[in-house]
Length: 355
Image 1 (cartoon, one colour):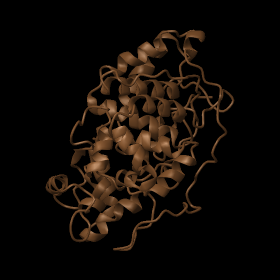
Image 2 (spheres, rainbow, N blue to C red; image 1 turned 180 degrees about the vertical axis):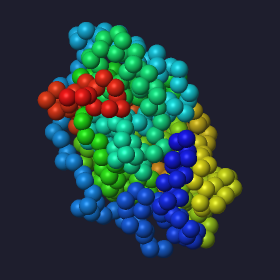
Image 3 (spheres, rainbow, N blue to C red; image 1 turned 30 degrees about the horizontal axis):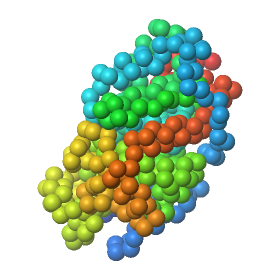
């Protein structure tokens, strides 16, 4: 069903148009104007028609072991039990879900809210996965300690547990908790200045992460999550189906394979692994792939820039990316945290509580 939704949206945005027009529709789908052929895409601030919430002040109200002191000492174990039942693909989706939640309105579970104009309906979020795992954990928690554990904290715990499993226990970090759930979720806030698009250059990536209180190192570290999960062909169509031949920055064997798999520019249903070497392992293979040209997105290739290349080489070698990833996930988890005055503890993660 999810694939059909993605297909419907993609086809509605591209229509019966030429190969050239479709290839660049990924820009329009993310809310950006299409570039001219032969002209590199450059980032421009979002038009005023897009709603971008102000960056909230940092929150210091989170605590490790929060629920042990708030009458739900088994909270993290309950979430872990739900996560352990998930497939590798859904586990990767849970990590992505946390990122997409925190980068729009902060880590407040606004991405979980259902409705015709919520974040879940924003173009970048149509392929998100893991909602069923979050809901299962929430249902179990409401039976154990009703009205105590926020959906926002469940998302954070689930991302940590997914990282632990996919890394074969190498990534293991404690999660400060105590978040409250937000009450607002708008589809158009997934576009423009919040979620980095797959065609972003280094300057764009650096700015968009900085806007969330994360530095360039955090950006490089968190990009390593692209070592797991899948992507639909349109997300990298600008590299596989440019005007003449695949991007010269893409390794030739991978380019040939992707041209065959994503056989036409309007192939909106086929997916490929983001890491063709270790697709189900959360490891440092991503950085090796960046160096060898075996990555999908323009935003991945951007890490080969002079400013970030040494860090990429470090993580591709003996640099401890596992520890760095955990630390960056914790730092990201502080973005836009809501207090009890600004949010609530939802009874169901997909809907706000009735007043």
